[in-house]
Length: 155
Image (cartoon, rainbow, N blue to C red; front, side):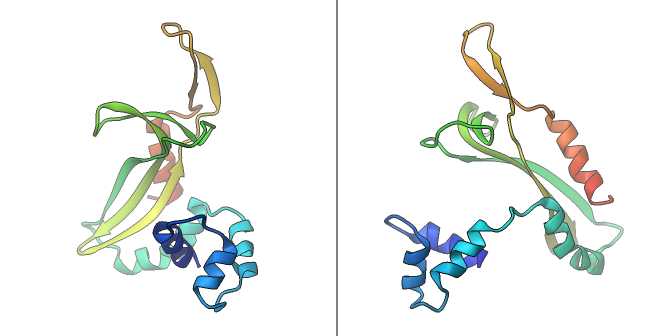
């Protein structure tokens, strides 16, 4: 369902809806099924690990490595909140508004498997002393988040 819904959102040129997806699929998936999927509990890194752990164990090797990276999905038109906030993007050397997330990928031989993720939330507000503007920051620093990703996988 996630793949179907993601493809639908990516390809849709007008307002996306559960009814629109059901209509596009000739009712093979009902709009109620789409709504239930979207209303379900949010997926977590622990959910991902439960699914991928048997695959990781099957390809595990001495030369396997855990690759950890951070990325930003830009959301310039979305209102700022704890999840969608301003982040410094080192690849463009500028601040961008969006969702920052950390990912952990296990790589062994020719196999790469996602094993963990973390969505960076900026829950603390503070006044910038230079600009006198209200800004947000995370209660957990990036290095601590990296350690938490690594430790949550038993690595």
